[in-house]
Length: 478
Image 1 (cartoon, rainbow, N blue to C red):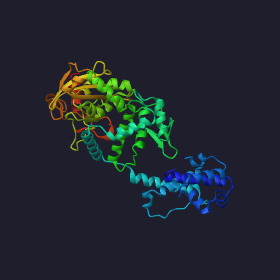
Image 2 (cartoon, rainbow, N blue to C red):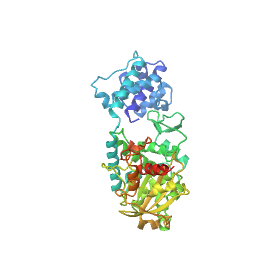
Image 3 (cartoon, rainbow, N blue to C red):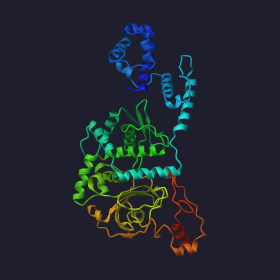
Image 4 (cartoon, one colour):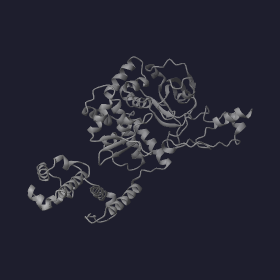
């Protein structure tokens, strides 16, 4: 019982049990050998009881010590009073310059509820980590720069994840469902699956009652266990409420990293990958199979350990069928398209890259391998459309030509040439098509709602003009 909130809850439970037995403070004080004023401090959450006093109070009230220490408020009224006390300790509330409000017996519940509702609106309006599209792009670009500097490896998070696994008895291999439930208990929480989770969230954590709410059915990388571990990641990494959008983004990345470090532990993944590299059989697919995770998570996790443990520089992308980039990382010299702020998300991937060609493959759900010649060198890539996603995204991992020798699929004969991001290979329509259709097309773009709500540049944001012109050219002769 170390937090202020725990002390307030204890005080409410003590008062509830005392009144339920018809005792005054003086009568309870006589039984435990304490002055009424001392017990009043306990009931108001102003003092922490010693173990001997706890035991004496439990004996006097004829209840187990555990009954006094339960985290749940004893009544709706007590819960409201606890929430109000917690609100008044918030610096945001204190900044209003109001005197401390003492809640008496005669104050109706409705008054407290009104005060809490107003406080909630004040808190939401003052602390919401909003950002303009420009600010969001800058924050994402800065975070990517930091990831590049450290090879996308976070030793401190790895250490915390490893200590957490030790605490719940993990040894090796894939993390079982039973071990995950032990992990939830290790952090002092319980897990509940619900069907009415708000549509705008993936999980809800009740910090007062120590419950985590999830939906049972999820798709892709956001399965219940990955969402659960990302939620626990915020707790394990001691995250506070985000100060701004950049802080929100950093916390999200760190929590996701923690989740991946639990599901694909460094101590097990690194020897497995080192052995595969020695055999020249590195494969994201094998990593996903061995640790029972999605292809996307396996590819993400590969980027965490590849540079630090395997001496490999690489790149990673996630894009849709139109080529819009949702996620990107590189430390192998590959040049992504980016805006003036350095943001890559929302830009369109070159048509000649593997992440675009995989959508046209004969077997689009098998791993697709390709070499691509670019102005910065030749790269080998493996690309895969994860069928577990709610919509089709290509997950691509690539390395420089000389590092392809360590990977399965290096014998691929597919080879493309790209002059992007600055060339004319795909971002601008062929001259003949431009001359024929420029100024004569008026496409209506589909709504894009991806991360950061950024659209690729152009006269019609989000529209691939080359696709539009080719379409018009095909149908003009009909």
